[in-house]
Amino acid sequence: METIAGNLYDFPKYYDLIFGSDWAAEIRFLKACFAKYSKRPVKRLFEPGCGTGRLVIQLAKAGYEVSGNDLNEKAINYCNARLKRAGFPESTFVGDMADFTVKKKIDAAFNMINTFRHLPNERTAEAHFRCVADSLTKGGLYIIGLHLTPKTPAKCTSETWASTKGNLSVVSNLWTIATDLKKRQERIGVTYDVYTPTKQFRITDETMFRTYNREQMFRLLGTEPRLRLLDMYDFRYDIDCPIDVTDDTEDIIFVLQRA
Image 1 (cartoon, rainbow, N blue to C red):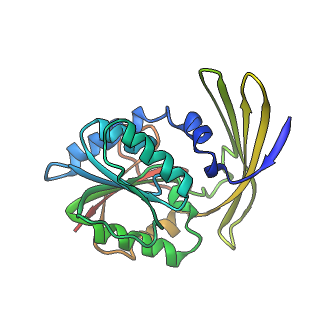
Image 2 (tube, rainbow, N blue to C red; image 1 turned 90 degrees about the vertical axis):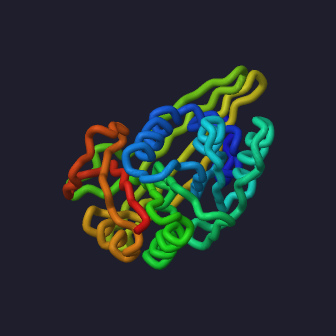
């Protein structure tokens, strides 16, 4: 199999095939959060680090006014093209989730699975929460999901996904290469194995995530006093079952509210 070294986010068609269909539980959870925690109707939404827009497009179809940003221009072009095809404004833009503004205050923001951990240090993480707080209306929600580093060894250090659409199939593998808790870095390897009727090839990439244990994450949340912690959940997305976070918690969703 031919191997190509490249940035996986530069191949939005393959990324979206793998991850684009896995949205229903997250959308249901977001809507449940809006109903449970917002004191006003939720209409305008923003996703920092929106990528190909797998959630943005579904929320637009559900009647919300959506926008988002991402550093990868190819992902943004893909997202805007799908919005346009569906009859919606091309409302996402190239931008940094640690340095952005919105044209209108938003009712809610969301960042559901680990994208936040691409921010490399405490300065950019604090800037991210500051930008979100600046963008939200009073009482607005921020729903952010990520993997924490547990005190005990992580139970899952690799994941595999596969998806097929028409004559195109993609198998993705992700695994932890190394973790340095002093530098707070988790080095991740990723591959896409792409199958078409005429060829097969593999795209390989590496990325870096910043690590957060329970204490580090709560300390970070405390740096933006305008965002108040309401509840916490895990990746079961069960709105009726908030959780308590321990040193061994791995999957976490924070529901925050703008004071």
